[in-house]
Image (tube, rainbow over all chains, first blue to last red; front, top):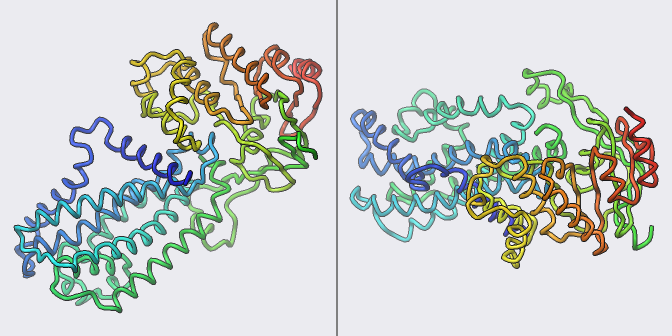
Length: 248
Length: 242
C-alpha cells in the first residue's frame, strides 16, 4: 500500500515536471500524434493504396508514441532523480516504473480521444476494441523491459541516451507504421521479422483498423516477446542497481 | 547486541565501481570479457554502535567517506562486506539542496518527499509543521525551489527532515548556511529531538557544534575510523588534523 502511494507520488511529479511552463499541458499527448498524422497523410497517403489510410496510420501511431514517449522520458529517469535516490530509501525501480505508469494513463486518454475522433474516419465500434486493453498491457511489459535496460545502462554510459535519440527515427521507419506492410516485406522481410515493435503495432492495427480478429499466433508472439524483454530488463537492472548511486 | 542498540556495524566495507576506461566499453560490459570498471574501496572495516537516544557526531576531512557512511546507514548503499543491523526508521537525509526537486515548488516538494517517505495519511499536520518551522511565507513556498537562496533551501530541507518524526535523524551539514536565527532554532529543535529519546547522526565541520550536541563521535580518515569515543576527545583529534 505504501509503495502504491510512493509510485503515485512519483508519477504525479513526472506529470507536473513534464508540463511545467507549457500552455496546453497534457493535451500534447494528443497533439503530437495528430501533427505526425498530418505529416504522414501529406507524404504517404498518395503513394500507398491502403483503404482508410488515416485509421491505418493512427492505429500504429498511438502505439508507437507510447513506446517513444516512455523510452525517451525514462531513459534519464534514474540520473535525474539523483537527489531523491541519494537521500531516501526508495526502490530505484520505482523511477522508470512511475514514468511508464504516467505515460500509460496518457496513452489511455489519447486512445479514447482518437476513438471518438475516428468516428469520421469510419472506425467500426464493437466489443473488439476492448482487446486494446490486453494489448496495451503486453506492450507495457515489453516497453518496461526495454526501459529498464536503457535507463540502467544510461547511468554508466550516458551515450546510451544520445544513441537512442538517433536510433529511434530509424526504428520508426523500419516498422510499417506509415506505409503498407507489403512495401517492406518484399525485400527486407527479415528486418520486420526481427523487429519486436512490429508485432505490437500489428496487433493494435488489427484491433482498430482491420475487420478481422488478431490470430492466436500473433498474441503468442506478443506474449513471448514481452516476457523475454521484461525478464532481460529485470535481470540487467538487478545486476546493476547496487552500483547506481556511485555513478549519479 | 541488546534492544537498546539502534545501529550496529561490524566490519562493514563499501566499495564502488569506478569507470576508468571510457566510452568504447559498452561492448566489453555486455560480453563480460573485461570489466571496464575497477572497484574502489570507500569505507574499510567500519565497526561502531549507536544506542537509542545517543547522538553521534561524524567528523573527517572532505572526501573521507562521511556521506557514504551516512548513505550506507540509511540503506541507500549496500555494503559488500560485513554485517549491518539497523532497528529503526530514518528521516530523509537532506544535505544542502540534495533531495529537493529544484523545478518543483516548496509545497510540491513537501508533498513528494512526505509521500515517498510513506506519510500519506496525516500529511496535513506534517505540512503545517514544515510551514511553521521553516518560517517561509506562502509566496515563497509557491515558487519553484530553484529560485530559493541556499539559506531558504536549507530551511525547507531541515524542516522536512524533522517533520517525519523518524527514530533516526541524519543531519548532513545542513545548518551551515542558515542565518543566525534559524541556526539557533535548529539547535533547539535538535535538543528537543534528543530529549524525545531519538537518535541523531550529525555530520559537521564545526567541532564546537559537535561538542555541544553529540555524546560520542567518530573520526573518519580515508574511509577508516581512526578514532572513536567521547565527542570532546574526538573533536580535539579532529582539530589536530589540520
